[in-house]
Picture 1 (cartoon, protein in one colour):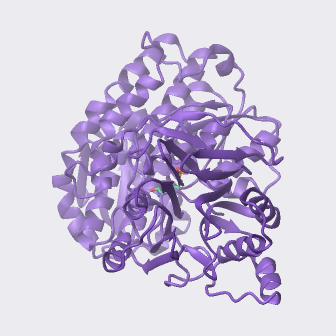
Picture 2: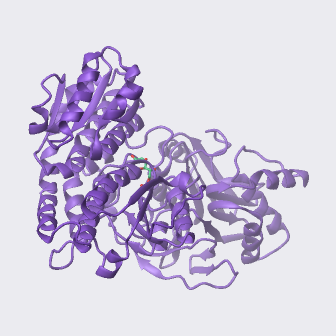
Length: 606
Ligand code: AGP
Protein backbone atom coordinates (compact mmCIF):
# COMPACT_ATOMS: atom_id res chain seq x y z
CA UNK A 1 0.00 0.00 0.00
CA UNK A 2 1.49 3.37 0.93
CA UNK A 3 5.02 3.98 2.08
CA UNK A 4 5.96 6.41 4.83
CA UNK A 5 9.33 7.88 5.85
CA UNK A 6 10.60 10.20 8.57
CA UNK A 7 14.09 11.58 9.28
CA UNK A 8 15.54 13.62 12.11
CA UNK A 9 19.26 14.26 12.39
CA UNK A 10 22.28 16.35 11.62
CA UNK A 11 21.88 16.22 7.82
CA UNK A 12 19.49 18.08 5.56
CA UNK A 13 16.38 15.89 5.32
CA UNK A 14 15.26 16.37 1.70
CA UNK A 15 17.52 13.96 -0.17
CA UNK A 16 17.42 11.40 2.64
CA UNK A 17 13.61 11.33 2.64
CA UNK A 18 13.45 11.18 -1.18
CA UNK A 19 16.07 8.40 -1.26
CA UNK A 20 13.98 6.32 1.12
CA UNK A 21 10.80 7.01 -0.86
CA UNK A 22 12.58 5.73 -4.01
CA UNK A 23 13.04 2.42 -2.18
CA UNK A 24 9.36 2.37 -1.20
CA UNK A 25 7.92 3.11 -4.66
CA UNK A 26 6.99 -0.57 -5.07
CA UNK A 27 4.42 -0.08 -2.29
CA UNK A 28 2.36 2.45 -4.17
CA UNK A 29 2.91 5.20 -6.66
CA UNK A 30 -0.07 7.36 -7.55
CA UNK A 31 1.18 10.46 -5.70
CA UNK A 32 3.95 11.51 -3.32
CA UNK A 33 4.87 14.27 -0.94
CA UNK A 34 7.47 15.59 1.50
CA UNK A 35 7.31 18.04 4.40
CA UNK A 36 9.90 19.48 6.76
CA UNK A 37 10.29 21.96 9.52
CA UNK A 38 12.88 24.63 10.23
CA UNK A 39 13.06 27.96 12.04
CA UNK A 40 10.74 29.47 9.43
CA UNK A 41 8.08 26.85 10.09
CA UNK A 42 6.60 24.04 8.02
CA UNK A 43 7.43 23.38 4.36
CA UNK A 44 5.32 21.10 2.18
CA UNK A 45 5.49 19.81 -1.38
CA UNK A 46 3.21 17.20 -2.98
CA UNK A 47 2.73 15.91 -6.52
CA UNK A 48 0.38 13.58 -8.35
CA UNK A 49 2.00 10.76 -10.32
CA UNK A 50 5.25 8.91 -9.82
CA UNK A 51 7.96 10.06 -7.43
CA UNK A 52 9.71 11.69 -10.39
CA UNK A 53 6.98 14.34 -10.42
CA UNK A 54 7.71 15.28 -6.81
CA UNK A 55 11.46 15.34 -7.47
CA UNK A 56 10.89 17.73 -10.36
CA UNK A 57 8.88 20.05 -8.11
CA UNK A 58 11.39 20.16 -5.26
CA UNK A 59 14.16 20.85 -7.76
CA UNK A 60 12.46 24.24 -8.22
CA UNK A 61 11.36 24.56 -4.60
CA UNK A 62 13.83 22.70 -2.31
CA UNK A 63 12.63 21.50 1.07
CA UNK A 64 14.85 22.94 3.86
CA UNK A 65 15.45 21.68 7.36
CA UNK A 66 16.89 18.63 9.11
CA UNK A 67 13.62 17.07 10.19
CA UNK A 68 11.22 15.82 7.57
CA UNK A 69 8.65 13.24 6.57
CA UNK A 70 7.65 11.78 3.22
CA UNK A 71 4.97 9.60 1.68
CA UNK A 72 4.29 7.58 -1.44
CA UNK A 73 0.61 6.83 -1.95
CA UNK A 74 -1.66 4.02 -3.12
CA UNK A 75 -5.11 5.63 -2.90
CA UNK A 76 -7.64 4.07 -0.53
CA UNK A 77 -9.90 6.97 0.55
CA UNK A 78 -10.06 9.92 -1.83
CA UNK A 79 -9.07 10.16 -5.46
CA UNK A 80 -5.60 10.69 -6.86
CA UNK A 81 -5.24 14.45 -6.47
CA UNK A 82 -2.62 16.75 -4.97
CA UNK A 83 -4.96 17.64 -2.10
CA UNK A 84 -5.32 13.98 -1.22
CA UNK A 85 -1.58 13.33 -1.40
CA UNK A 86 0.31 13.12 1.86
CA UNK A 87 1.73 14.72 3.98
CA UNK A 88 -1.53 16.09 5.33
CA UNK A 89 -1.46 19.18 7.51
CA UNK A 90 -3.52 21.03 10.12
CA UNK A 91 -3.00 24.76 9.69
CA UNK A 92 0.75 25.36 9.84
CA UNK A 93 1.08 23.48 13.11
CA UNK A 94 1.52 19.84 12.19
CA UNK A 95 2.10 17.51 9.22
CA UNK A 96 1.52 13.75 9.10
CA UNK A 97 2.07 10.79 6.80
CA UNK A 98 -0.04 7.65 7.19
CA UNK A 99 -0.26 4.12 5.79
CA UNK A 100 -3.44 2.15 6.51
CA UNK A 101 -7.11 2.99 7.01
CA UNK A 102 -8.60 4.92 9.95
CA UNK A 103 -11.86 2.99 10.07
CA UNK A 104 -13.73 5.48 12.30
CA UNK A 105 -12.54 8.53 10.36
CA UNK A 106 -16.06 9.57 9.34
CA UNK A 107 -17.29 10.16 12.89
CA UNK A 108 -13.99 11.76 13.92
CA UNK A 109 -14.18 14.06 10.88
CA UNK A 110 -17.77 15.05 11.66
CA UNK A 111 -16.83 15.81 15.26
CA UNK A 112 -13.84 17.92 14.21
CA UNK A 113 -15.89 19.82 11.61
CA UNK A 114 -18.40 20.56 14.36
CA UNK A 115 -15.50 22.08 16.32
CA UNK A 116 -14.81 24.34 13.36
CA UNK A 117 -12.02 22.39 11.69
CA UNK A 118 -11.76 22.92 7.91
CA UNK A 119 -10.70 19.86 5.96
CA UNK A 120 -8.78 20.22 2.70
CA UNK A 121 -8.87 16.61 1.45
CA UNK A 122 -11.21 13.62 1.05
CA UNK A 123 -8.90 11.24 2.87
CA UNK A 124 -9.26 9.41 6.17
CA UNK A 125 -5.63 10.28 7.03
CA UNK A 126 -6.19 14.03 7.32
CA UNK A 127 -8.16 13.35 10.50
CA UNK A 128 -4.85 12.47 12.16
CA UNK A 129 -3.35 15.89 11.41
CA UNK A 130 -6.29 17.67 13.04
CA UNK A 131 -6.30 15.38 16.05
CA UNK A 132 -2.61 16.12 16.58
CA UNK A 133 -3.26 19.84 16.20
CA UNK A 134 -6.11 19.67 18.71
CA UNK A 135 -3.97 18.08 21.42
CA UNK A 136 -0.88 20.17 20.64
CA UNK A 137 -2.96 23.28 21.22
CA UNK A 138 -3.77 21.90 24.67
CA UNK A 139 -0.05 22.18 25.40
CA UNK A 140 0.41 18.44 25.95
CA UNK A 141 3.89 16.90 25.63
CA UNK A 142 4.52 14.57 22.64
CA UNK A 143 3.92 11.32 24.60
CA UNK A 144 0.54 12.54 25.88
CA UNK A 145 -0.39 13.84 22.42
CA UNK A 146 0.32 10.42 20.90
CA UNK A 147 -1.64 8.67 23.64
CA UNK A 148 -4.64 10.93 23.07
CA UNK A 149 -4.57 10.58 19.27
CA UNK A 150 -4.20 6.79 19.42
CA UNK A 151 -7.05 6.53 21.91
CA UNK A 152 -9.37 8.16 19.36
CA UNK A 153 -8.60 6.12 16.24
CA UNK A 154 -9.56 2.62 15.11
CA UNK A 155 -8.21 0.58 12.20
CA UNK A 156 -4.86 -0.18 10.61
CA UNK A 157 -2.26 2.55 10.77
CA UNK A 158 1.41 3.40 10.64
CA UNK A 159 1.91 7.12 10.90
CA UNK A 160 4.55 9.72 11.64
CA UNK A 161 3.77 13.29 12.69
CA UNK A 162 5.94 16.41 12.84
CA UNK A 163 4.91 19.54 14.73
CA UNK A 164 6.20 23.12 14.77
CA UNK A 165 5.94 23.01 18.56
CA UNK A 166 8.42 20.07 18.73
CA UNK A 167 10.63 20.70 15.66
CA UNK A 168 13.27 18.03 16.39
CA UNK A 169 10.84 15.27 17.24
CA UNK A 170 8.99 12.67 15.19
CA UNK A 171 5.89 11.11 16.74
CA UNK A 172 5.18 7.66 15.31
CA UNK A 173 2.82 4.76 15.92
CA UNK A 174 1.70 1.51 14.31
CA UNK A 175 -1.15 -0.93 14.40
CA UNK A 176 -1.32 -3.70 11.74
CA UNK A 177 0.67 -1.68 9.19
CA UNK A 178 4.45 -2.12 9.35
CA UNK A 179 6.84 0.50 10.75
CA UNK A 180 10.57 0.27 11.42
CA UNK A 181 12.85 2.75 13.20
CA UNK A 182 16.46 2.97 12.07
CA UNK A 183 19.06 4.37 14.45
CA UNK A 184 22.58 5.66 13.88
CA UNK A 185 24.90 8.39 15.19
CA UNK A 186 23.09 11.74 15.36
CA UNK A 187 20.14 10.54 13.34
CA UNK A 188 17.02 8.42 13.36
CA UNK A 189 14.79 7.32 10.49
CA UNK A 190 11.39 5.71 10.44
CA UNK A 191 10.00 3.84 7.43
CA UNK A 192 7.35 1.33 6.33
CA UNK A 193 10.08 -1.11 5.33
CA UNK A 194 13.56 -1.57 6.79
CA UNK A 195 14.97 -2.11 3.30
CA UNK A 196 14.08 1.48 2.45
CA UNK A 197 16.55 2.72 5.04
CA UNK A 198 19.13 -0.10 4.96
CA UNK A 199 21.45 2.22 3.02
CA UNK A 200 21.33 4.63 6.01
CA UNK A 201 21.55 2.19 8.88
CA UNK A 202 21.32 -1.55 9.49
CA UNK A 203 20.31 -1.09 13.15
CA UNK A 204 16.57 -1.31 13.15
CA UNK A 205 13.71 -1.64 15.65
CA UNK A 206 10.42 -3.06 14.42
CA UNK A 207 7.49 -1.53 16.25
CA UNK A 208 4.85 -4.02 17.36
CA UNK A 209 1.10 -3.46 17.02
CA UNK A 210 -0.12 -0.61 19.29
CA UNK A 211 3.44 0.59 19.93
CA UNK A 212 4.13 4.30 19.66
CA UNK A 213 7.41 6.17 19.73
CA UNK A 214 9.02 9.53 20.32
CA UNK A 215 11.97 9.81 17.95
CA UNK A 216 14.80 12.36 18.00
CA UNK A 217 18.31 12.45 16.54
CA UNK A 218 19.54 11.04 19.86
CA UNK A 219 17.36 7.92 19.62
CA UNK A 220 13.83 6.84 20.40
CA UNK A 221 11.59 5.96 23.32
CA UNK A 222 9.00 3.30 22.55
CA UNK A 223 5.78 2.74 24.50
CA UNK A 224 3.48 -0.25 24.40
CA UNK A 225 -0.32 -0.43 24.48
CA UNK A 226 -0.23 -0.10 28.30
CA UNK A 227 1.59 3.23 27.86
CA UNK A 228 4.68 1.70 29.46
CA UNK A 229 8.18 2.01 28.07
CA UNK A 230 8.86 -1.05 25.88
CA UNK A 231 12.38 -2.36 25.34
CA UNK A 232 12.22 -3.47 21.71
CA UNK A 233 15.16 -5.38 20.30
CA UNK A 234 17.50 -3.60 17.86
CA UNK A 235 18.03 -6.04 14.97
CA UNK A 236 20.60 -6.04 12.20
CA UNK A 237 18.92 -5.72 8.78
CA UNK A 238 20.20 -8.59 6.65
CA UNK A 239 19.48 -7.80 3.01
CA UNK A 240 22.05 -5.66 1.29
CA UNK A 241 20.83 -2.49 -0.45
CA UNK A 242 22.70 -3.61 -3.56
CA UNK A 243 19.92 -6.18 -4.10
CA UNK A 244 17.59 -3.24 -4.63
CA UNK A 245 18.71 -2.38 -8.12
CA UNK A 246 17.97 -3.78 -11.57
CA UNK A 247 21.46 -5.08 -12.27
CA UNK A 248 21.22 -4.16 -15.95
CA UNK A 249 17.79 -5.66 -16.59
CA UNK A 250 14.99 -3.51 -18.03
CA UNK A 251 12.70 -4.14 -15.10
CA UNK A 252 12.88 -5.58 -11.59
CA UNK A 253 10.47 -8.27 -12.79
CA UNK A 254 12.81 -9.33 -15.60
CA UNK A 255 15.69 -9.46 -13.12
CA UNK A 256 13.63 -11.44 -10.62
CA UNK A 257 12.52 -13.95 -13.28
CA UNK A 258 16.21 -14.57 -13.96
CA UNK A 259 17.03 -14.85 -10.26
CA UNK A 260 14.83 -17.92 -9.84
CA UNK A 261 17.56 -20.57 -10.17
CA UNK A 262 19.37 -18.94 -7.23
CA UNK A 263 16.15 -18.35 -5.29
CA UNK A 264 15.22 -22.01 -5.69
CA UNK A 265 18.62 -23.37 -4.69
CA UNK A 266 18.87 -21.01 -1.70
CA UNK A 267 15.41 -22.09 -0.59
CA UNK A 268 16.22 -25.79 -0.95
CA UNK A 269 19.25 -25.20 1.29
CA UNK A 270 17.05 -23.45 3.84
CA UNK A 271 14.82 -26.55 3.82
CA UNK A 272 17.72 -28.92 4.46
CA UNK A 273 19.83 -29.61 7.55
CA UNK A 274 23.60 -29.24 7.61
CA UNK A 275 23.99 -32.76 6.22
CA UNK A 276 21.74 -31.83 3.25
CA UNK A 277 18.83 -33.94 4.55
CA UNK A 278 15.44 -32.48 3.67
CA UNK A 279 13.67 -31.38 6.88
CA UNK A 280 11.59 -28.39 5.72
CA UNK A 281 13.32 -26.68 8.63
CA UNK A 282 11.13 -28.57 11.10
CA UNK A 283 12.14 -31.02 13.80
CA UNK A 284 10.48 -34.44 14.12
CA UNK A 285 8.05 -33.41 16.84
CA UNK A 286 6.85 -30.41 14.78
CA UNK A 287 6.37 -32.63 11.72
CA UNK A 288 4.51 -35.33 13.64
CA UNK A 289 2.23 -32.75 15.28
CA UNK A 290 0.82 -31.81 11.86
CA UNK A 291 -2.40 -33.81 11.43
CA UNK A 292 -4.55 -31.47 9.30
CA UNK A 293 -3.57 -28.25 7.52
CA UNK A 294 -5.34 -25.08 6.46
CA UNK A 295 -3.34 -23.05 3.95
CA UNK A 296 -4.08 -19.30 4.11
CA UNK A 297 -2.93 -16.85 1.44
CA UNK A 298 -3.88 -14.25 -1.13
CA UNK A 299 -3.23 -13.75 -4.84
CA UNK A 300 -0.24 -15.56 -6.27
CA UNK A 301 0.55 -17.00 -2.85
CA UNK A 302 -2.91 -18.57 -2.81
CA UNK A 303 -2.15 -20.38 -6.07
CA UNK A 304 1.06 -21.65 -4.54
CA UNK A 305 -1.05 -22.91 -1.65
CA UNK A 306 -3.38 -24.77 -4.01
CA UNK A 307 -0.46 -26.52 -5.69
CA UNK A 308 0.97 -27.33 -2.25
CA UNK A 309 -2.29 -28.98 -1.30
CA UNK A 310 -1.98 -31.52 -4.14
CA UNK A 311 1.58 -32.33 -3.09
CA UNK A 312 0.84 -32.72 0.61
CA UNK A 313 -2.23 -34.89 0.00
CA UNK A 314 -0.37 -37.04 -2.54
CA UNK A 315 2.97 -37.42 -0.71
CA UNK A 316 1.93 -37.22 2.94
CA UNK A 317 -1.74 -38.30 2.99
CA UNK A 318 -2.55 -35.35 5.28
CA UNK A 319 -5.87 -33.50 4.79
CA UNK A 320 -5.38 -29.95 3.51
CA UNK A 321 -7.82 -27.13 2.83
CA UNK A 322 -6.88 -23.91 1.05
CA UNK A 323 -8.59 -20.73 2.13
CA UNK A 324 -8.54 -17.28 0.56
CA UNK A 325 -7.27 -15.30 3.52
CA UNK A 326 -9.73 -12.39 3.15
CA UNK A 327 -12.64 -14.86 3.28
CA UNK A 328 -11.33 -17.04 6.08
CA UNK A 329 -11.21 -14.57 8.92
CA UNK A 330 -14.85 -13.54 8.52
CA UNK A 331 -16.26 -17.08 8.48
CA UNK A 332 -16.82 -19.61 11.24
CA UNK A 333 -14.56 -22.34 9.83
CA UNK A 334 -14.67 -25.74 11.52
CA UNK A 335 -11.06 -26.23 12.53
CA UNK A 336 -11.54 -29.33 14.71
CA UNK A 337 -9.87 -31.65 12.15
CA UNK A 338 -6.92 -29.31 11.66
CA UNK A 339 -3.82 -28.86 13.76
CA UNK A 340 -1.89 -26.32 11.74
CA UNK A 341 -2.49 -23.12 9.80
CA UNK A 342 0.20 -22.29 7.27
CA UNK A 343 0.18 -18.71 5.99
CA UNK A 344 1.94 -18.09 2.71
CA UNK A 345 2.96 -14.50 2.06
CA UNK A 346 5.88 -13.00 0.12
CA UNK A 347 5.74 -9.68 1.97
CA UNK A 348 4.62 -11.09 5.29
CA UNK A 349 2.52 -7.93 5.60
CA UNK A 350 -0.67 -8.67 3.61
CA UNK A 351 -3.30 -7.63 6.13
CA UNK A 352 -5.75 -10.30 4.92
CA UNK A 353 -3.21 -13.06 5.52
CA UNK A 354 -2.09 -11.55 8.84
CA UNK A 355 -5.66 -11.34 10.15
CA UNK A 356 -6.39 -14.87 8.91
CA UNK A 357 -3.33 -16.15 10.78
CA UNK A 358 -4.40 -14.37 13.98
CA UNK A 359 -7.88 -15.88 13.59
CA UNK A 360 -6.43 -19.37 13.13
CA UNK A 361 -4.34 -18.81 16.25
CA UNK A 362 -7.53 -17.89 18.13
CA UNK A 363 -9.08 -21.16 16.87
CA UNK A 364 -6.20 -22.97 18.59
CA UNK A 365 -4.15 -23.90 15.53
CA UNK A 366 -0.37 -23.84 15.41
CA UNK A 367 0.67 -21.15 12.94
CA UNK A 368 3.50 -21.51 10.44
CA UNK A 369 4.54 -18.74 8.06
CA UNK A 370 6.04 -19.32 4.61
CA UNK A 371 7.41 -15.82 4.14
CA UNK A 372 10.06 -14.07 2.08
CA UNK A 373 10.63 -11.14 4.45
CA UNK A 374 11.90 -12.71 7.63
CA UNK A 375 11.45 -9.52 9.69
CA UNK A 376 7.83 -9.08 8.59
CA UNK A 377 4.83 -9.01 10.89
CA UNK A 378 3.61 -12.46 9.84
CA UNK A 379 7.11 -13.84 10.37
CA UNK A 380 7.29 -12.29 13.83
CA UNK A 381 3.86 -13.50 14.91
CA UNK A 382 3.87 -17.03 13.45
CA UNK A 383 4.83 -19.89 15.78
CA UNK A 384 7.31 -21.14 13.19
CA UNK A 385 8.81 -19.76 9.98
CA UNK A 386 9.51 -21.76 6.81
CA UNK A 387 11.50 -19.09 4.94
CA UNK A 388 11.64 -18.65 1.21
CA UNK A 389 15.14 -17.44 0.37
CA UNK A 390 14.19 -15.56 -2.81
CA UNK A 391 15.78 -12.27 -1.77
CA UNK A 392 13.96 -8.93 -1.96
CA UNK A 393 11.20 -9.04 -4.58
CA UNK A 394 10.53 -5.51 -5.81
CA UNK A 395 8.45 -6.11 -8.94
CA UNK A 396 4.80 -5.93 -7.95
CA UNK A 397 4.09 -9.12 -9.92
CA UNK A 398 5.43 -11.98 -7.84
CA UNK A 399 7.77 -14.38 -9.65
CA UNK A 400 10.76 -15.75 -7.71
CA UNK A 401 8.83 -15.70 -4.45
CA UNK A 402 6.15 -17.89 -6.05
CA UNK A 403 8.55 -20.60 -7.21
CA UNK A 404 10.37 -20.40 -3.87
CA UNK A 405 7.03 -20.90 -2.08
CA UNK A 406 6.47 -23.98 -4.23
CA UNK A 407 9.88 -25.32 -3.21
CA UNK A 408 9.04 -24.90 0.48
CA UNK A 409 5.66 -26.62 0.03
CA UNK A 410 7.22 -29.51 -1.92
CA UNK A 411 9.90 -29.94 0.75
CA UNK A 412 7.22 -29.89 3.45
CA UNK A 413 5.21 -32.55 1.59
CA UNK A 414 8.26 -34.81 1.31
CA UNK A 415 9.31 -34.29 4.94
CA UNK A 416 5.76 -34.98 6.20
CA UNK A 417 5.35 -38.05 3.97
CA UNK A 418 8.70 -39.46 5.06
CA UNK A 419 7.94 -38.74 8.71
CA UNK A 420 4.54 -40.45 8.72
CA UNK A 421 5.58 -43.25 6.38
CA UNK A 422 3.21 -42.29 3.56
CA UNK A 423 6.20 -42.46 1.23
CA UNK A 424 9.32 -44.57 1.65
CA UNK A 425 12.69 -43.06 2.47
CA UNK A 426 13.91 -44.03 -1.00
CA UNK A 427 10.93 -42.29 -2.67
CA UNK A 428 11.61 -39.22 -0.53
CA UNK A 429 15.25 -39.26 -1.56
CA UNK A 430 14.29 -39.65 -5.23
CA UNK A 431 11.93 -36.66 -5.05
CA UNK A 432 14.62 -34.64 -3.27
CA UNK A 433 17.02 -35.58 -6.05
CA UNK A 434 14.49 -34.42 -8.66
CA UNK A 435 13.99 -31.17 -6.75
CA UNK A 436 17.73 -30.51 -6.86
CA UNK A 437 17.45 -30.47 -10.66
CA UNK A 438 15.06 -27.50 -10.53
CA UNK A 439 17.64 -24.66 -10.52
CA UNK A 440 19.09 -26.13 -13.71
CA UNK A 441 15.73 -26.74 -15.36
CA UNK A 442 14.50 -23.26 -14.43
CA UNK A 443 17.77 -21.75 -15.61
CA UNK A 444 17.36 -23.51 -18.97
CA UNK A 445 13.81 -22.15 -19.21
CA UNK A 446 15.22 -18.63 -19.45
CA UNK A 447 15.97 -19.49 -23.08
CA UNK A 448 12.20 -19.38 -23.67
CA UNK A 449 12.22 -15.57 -23.91
CA UNK A 450 13.07 -15.88 -27.62
CA UNK A 451 10.43 -18.47 -28.51
CA UNK A 452 7.71 -16.75 -26.48
CA UNK A 453 8.32 -13.27 -27.91
CA UNK A 454 6.34 -13.88 -31.16
CA UNK A 455 3.50 -15.43 -29.16
CA UNK A 456 3.38 -12.36 -26.91
CA UNK A 457 3.47 -10.14 -30.00
CA UNK A 458 0.18 -11.68 -31.13
CA UNK A 459 -1.31 -12.01 -27.64
CA UNK A 460 -0.99 -8.27 -26.99
CA UNK A 461 -3.99 -7.66 -29.29
CA UNK A 462 -6.26 -10.12 -27.48
CA UNK A 463 -9.14 -8.80 -25.41
CA UNK A 464 -9.36 -11.98 -23.37
CA UNK A 465 -7.35 -15.14 -22.75
CA UNK A 466 -8.17 -18.43 -21.03
CA UNK A 467 -5.66 -20.51 -19.09
CA UNK A 468 -6.29 -24.22 -18.56
CA UNK A 469 -4.70 -26.86 -16.41
CA UNK A 470 -5.63 -30.11 -14.68
CA UNK A 471 -4.68 -31.40 -11.24
CA UNK A 472 -1.49 -29.63 -10.02
CA UNK A 473 -1.53 -27.53 -13.20
CA UNK A 474 -4.97 -26.02 -12.54
CA UNK A 475 -3.66 -23.55 -9.90
CA UNK A 476 -0.76 -22.79 -12.25
CA UNK A 477 -3.31 -21.89 -14.93
CA UNK A 478 -4.90 -19.47 -12.44
CA UNK A 479 -1.49 -17.99 -11.64
CA UNK A 480 -0.71 -17.61 -15.35
CA UNK A 481 -4.00 -15.77 -15.79
CA UNK A 482 -3.22 -13.51 -12.83
CA UNK A 483 0.23 -12.66 -14.23
CA UNK A 484 -1.21 -11.76 -17.64
CA UNK A 485 -4.07 -9.64 -16.34
CA UNK A 486 -2.08 -7.76 -13.66
CA UNK A 487 0.74 -6.91 -16.06
CA UNK A 488 -0.88 -6.40 -19.48
CA UNK A 489 -4.42 -5.49 -18.32
CA UNK A 490 -5.82 -8.14 -20.72
CA UNK A 491 -8.75 -10.01 -19.17
CA UNK A 492 -7.60 -13.54 -18.36
CA UNK A 493 -9.11 -16.38 -16.40
CA UNK A 494 -7.82 -19.76 -15.24
CA UNK A 495 -10.01 -22.86 -15.37
CA UNK A 496 -9.67 -26.51 -14.48
CA UNK A 497 -9.54 -28.11 -17.94
CA UNK A 498 -12.35 -30.48 -17.04
CA UNK A 499 -14.56 -27.52 -16.12
CA UNK A 500 -14.59 -26.01 -19.63
CA UNK A 501 -17.51 -28.18 -20.80
CA UNK A 502 -19.57 -27.08 -17.76
CA UNK A 503 -20.01 -23.54 -19.04
CA UNK A 504 -16.82 -21.66 -19.88
CA UNK A 505 -16.71 -23.35 -23.31
CA UNK A 506 -19.51 -20.95 -24.26
CA UNK A 507 -16.81 -18.28 -24.31
CA UNK A 508 -15.05 -19.99 -27.19
CA UNK A 509 -14.93 -18.18 -30.46
CA UNK A 510 -12.58 -18.03 -33.40
CA UNK A 511 -9.07 -17.12 -32.38
CA UNK A 512 -9.67 -16.89 -28.64
CA UNK A 513 -6.22 -17.59 -27.15
CA UNK A 514 -6.14 -20.55 -24.75
CA UNK A 515 -2.94 -21.26 -22.83
CA UNK A 516 -2.90 -24.80 -21.52
CA UNK A 517 -0.36 -26.42 -19.21
CA UNK A 518 0.12 -30.14 -19.80
CA UNK A 519 2.43 -32.54 -18.01
CA UNK A 520 3.47 -35.99 -19.07
CA UNK A 521 1.51 -37.87 -16.45
CA UNK A 522 -1.69 -39.84 -16.14
CA UNK A 523 -3.72 -36.62 -16.59
CA UNK A 524 -2.19 -35.80 -19.98
CA UNK A 525 -4.75 -37.69 -22.04
CA UNK A 526 -7.64 -36.05 -20.18
CA UNK A 527 -6.11 -32.62 -20.77
CA UNK A 528 -5.70 -33.45 -24.43
CA UNK A 529 -9.37 -34.29 -24.90
CA UNK A 530 -10.40 -31.07 -23.14
CA UNK A 531 -8.13 -29.15 -25.49
CA UNK A 532 -9.52 -30.91 -28.55
CA UNK A 533 -12.99 -29.63 -27.53
CA UNK A 534 -11.58 -26.10 -27.45
CA UNK A 535 -9.64 -26.55 -30.69
CA UNK A 536 -12.76 -27.81 -32.46
CA UNK A 537 -14.48 -24.54 -31.57
CA UNK A 538 -11.84 -22.24 -32.97
CA UNK A 539 -9.69 -21.68 -29.92
CA UNK A 540 -6.09 -20.58 -30.59
CA UNK A 541 -4.33 -23.26 -28.55
CA UNK A 542 -1.00 -22.41 -26.88
CA UNK A 543 0.35 -25.39 -24.98
CA UNK A 544 3.08 -25.39 -22.34
CA UNK A 545 4.68 -28.70 -21.40
CA UNK A 546 7.62 -31.04 -21.72
CA UNK A 547 8.37 -32.47 -25.17
CA UNK A 548 6.92 -35.83 -24.16
CA UNK A 549 3.66 -34.13 -23.17
CA UNK A 550 3.52 -31.95 -26.27
CA UNK A 551 3.93 -34.98 -28.54
CA UNK A 552 0.28 -35.72 -27.72
CA UNK A 553 -0.83 -32.31 -29.00
CA UNK A 554 0.00 -32.06 -32.68
CA UNK A 555 -3.08 -29.85 -33.23
CA UNK A 556 -1.83 -26.98 -31.01
CA UNK A 557 -1.18 -23.69 -32.81
CA UNK A 558 1.76 -22.77 -30.54
CA UNK A 559 3.99 -24.98 -28.39
CA UNK A 560 6.17 -23.80 -25.54
CA UNK A 561 8.50 -26.62 -24.57
CA UNK A 562 9.83 -26.72 -21.04
CA UNK A 563 12.80 -28.87 -19.96
CA UNK A 564 12.01 -32.46 -19.01
CA UNK A 565 11.29 -32.79 -15.30
CA UNK A 566 9.61 -34.97 -12.69
CA UNK A 567 5.88 -34.52 -13.58
CA UNK A 568 5.09 -33.53 -9.98
CA UNK A 569 7.47 -30.58 -10.38
CA UNK A 570 5.94 -29.26 -13.61
CA UNK A 571 4.31 -26.30 -11.74
CA UNK A 572 7.78 -24.96 -10.84
CA UNK A 573 9.23 -25.20 -14.34
CA UNK A 574 5.89 -24.32 -15.98
CA UNK A 575 5.68 -21.09 -13.97
CA UNK A 576 8.61 -19.66 -15.93
CA UNK A 577 6.92 -19.51 -19.37
CA UNK A 578 3.79 -18.16 -17.70
CA UNK A 579 5.84 -15.32 -16.21
CA UNK A 580 7.75 -14.70 -19.45
CA UNK A 581 4.54 -14.66 -21.53
CA UNK A 582 2.94 -12.10 -19.20
CA UNK A 583 6.15 -10.03 -19.05
CA UNK A 584 6.66 -9.91 -22.82
CA UNK A 585 2.99 -9.23 -23.55
CA UNK A 586 3.06 -6.33 -21.09
CA UNK A 587 6.34 -5.13 -22.63
CA UNK A 588 4.68 -5.18 -26.06
CA UNK A 589 1.75 -3.20 -24.68
CA UNK A 590 4.01 -0.72 -22.93
CA UNK A 591 2.34 -1.04 -19.55
CA UNK A 592 4.25 -0.23 -16.37
CA UNK A 593 5.66 -3.66 -15.63
CA UNK A 594 7.19 -3.07 -12.20
CA UNK A 595 4.34 -0.88 -11.01
CA UNK A 596 1.13 -1.93 -12.80
CA UNK A 597 -1.82 0.42 -12.46
CA UNK A 598 -3.95 0.18 -9.32
CA UNK A 599 -1.65 -2.43 -7.73
CA UNK A 600 0.78 -2.41 -4.81
CA UNK A 601 3.40 -4.90 -3.75
CA UNK A 602 2.06 -5.39 -0.29
CA UNK A 603 -1.65 -4.92 0.39
CA UNK A 604 -1.76 -3.74 3.98
CA UNK A 605 -5.37 -2.54 3.98
CA UNK A 606 -8.53 -4.66 3.85
C1 AGP B 1 1.14 -11.33 -7.28
O1 AGP B 1 1.73 -11.16 -8.57
C2 AGP B 1 0.33 -10.15 -6.87
N1 AGP B 1 1.12 -9.00 -6.84
C3 AGP B 1 -0.51 -10.38 -5.62
O2 AGP B 1 -1.52 -11.28 -5.98
C4 AGP B 1 0.21 -10.95 -4.38
O3 AGP B 1 0.59 -12.28 -4.61
C5 AGP B 1 -0.79 -10.92 -3.20
O4 AGP B 1 -1.11 -9.58 -2.93
C6 AGP B 1 -0.23 -11.59 -1.93
O5 AGP B 1 0.91 -10.91 -1.49
P1 AGP B 1 1.82 -11.60 -0.35
O6 AGP B 1 2.32 -12.89 -0.91
O7 AGP B 1 2.91 -10.61 -0.09
O8 AGP B 1 0.93 -11.83 0.83
